[in-house]
Image 1 (cartoon, rainbow, N blue to C red):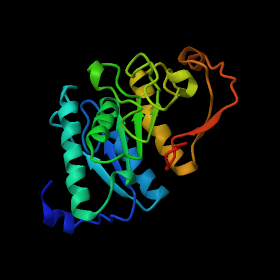
Image 2: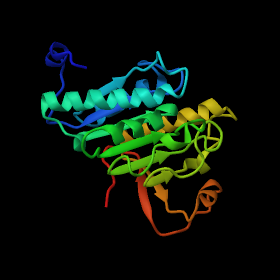
Image 3: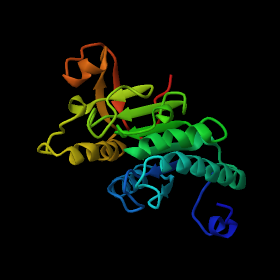
Image 4: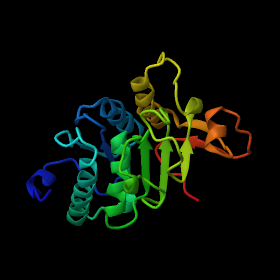
Length: 226
């Protein structure tokens, strides 16, 4: 922030969309979520990708609140310097970073287009949850619902792949379940998404008995508004 020379020497293009990636608890700039998502987005579209490294504070969830506000100030500065706008942004966060993504979006000047919470953490300050008022479209992917991740719906659309926990191939490994959220997101960016079936409730989603007529792709490059 405020380092004009660094910005001028970067490849930032204000005419393109901006992807902001926020890692989770005990993560860093080289976290698994970033290793999965950076190449996926760069393969999927010609976009700007910004990786946030808040590792110095990621050992304690409360720091995610202050980090989110700091990221928002950086985005406002970046936009003031380049002419980019909040409507170009897709902010994604994993675990604790899923709630931080919402904090970023609600403090940025203007309406952020798209927020994705990747299995937002279950242990968090209750008044700072990611929510549907944070961006024009807020999507949540639950893969360890009620364990490492938040169980109940949080966004405009909440997806519960495979019921929202105990992911195939994870052999009862709750960390693996948690991490599936960003792996599914990366795959959706490359392939166009997975088809979600509309459910009446979270319990119905958890047992896979959804039969309402609505269909919507999970993940992908573009926000699903309207």
